[in-house]
Amino acid sequence: MLITLHQSIFMSFIFSTIIITFLCSIPFGLIVATLFYDIDPRHYHSRNIGMSNTWRCCGAGAGLATLFLDTGKTVFALWIATTINAPNLFVLGFLCVFFHCFSIYLNGKGGKGVACAGGVILFFAPPIWYTAIGTWILIRFLSNKASVASLCATLTVIIHTFLYEVWFAPCISMIGLLVLIRHKENIIRLRKKQELNL
Image 1 (cartoon, rainbow, N blue to C red):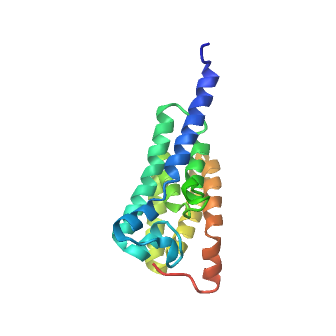
Image 2: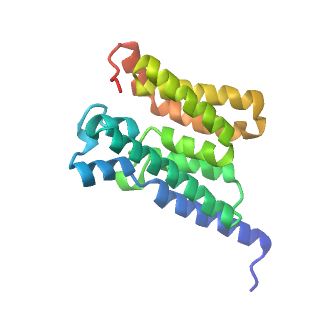
Image 3: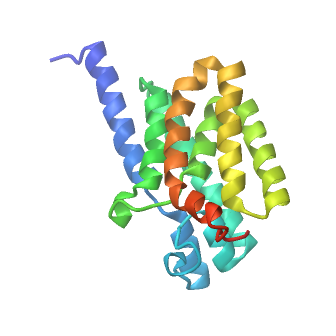
């Protein structure tokens, strides 16, 4: 029986979802820290596996490597989805961030989603990515706190998108909300003036 066009599109979406699940769940921060530094970041500082805590535990090189790999896995996953003409790319972009935050390899635990969110933005809208990176660097320099930089960058991207890139607003809204939720503990520590520096 010949596969219909609708079946083909549906299959490409399912295949892309499977690829994203396995690829974006890879905890590169944990891999970099344990493989090259023999340190498990889940036992130190904020106990997170993302770029910021990997940086705290292992240094700038490990942190930047984690940032590059987490961003790269997202871009690569979305590139695969585009190559096979998968529909609902914005939904797939959200799933990239979701499975980074709730990794299948770590029993549903994971990072905060910032680097992967950056990967989604870089793939779909590079100009917004430049805005996000610029905001993050500026606020990080002024506050010396990665969480403050990430929160400000997230809010800046959401506002920028609704003002100038409305077509991207649904995707950014979902991802931005997830990133903000994942920073709940950081917000609590900030209110108590107990947040870690970076």
